[in-house]
Length: 75
Image: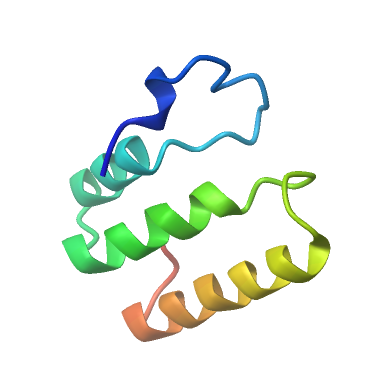
């Protein structure tokens, strides 16, 4: 996974999430690597206004399912 935060224009939205930075953060907080990887990718997609609401709803449902599988809220 690459750092998107190094791309020109990244960070112009307050909702930008770099999947690599998010993965690093979650792993440091004790989230298992495979859960952190999926969570980081999903959080990178959850920026409002970037995708149609139907897609955001699907991504949020997938994130909720991931938290259920993990057994607790992902920080």
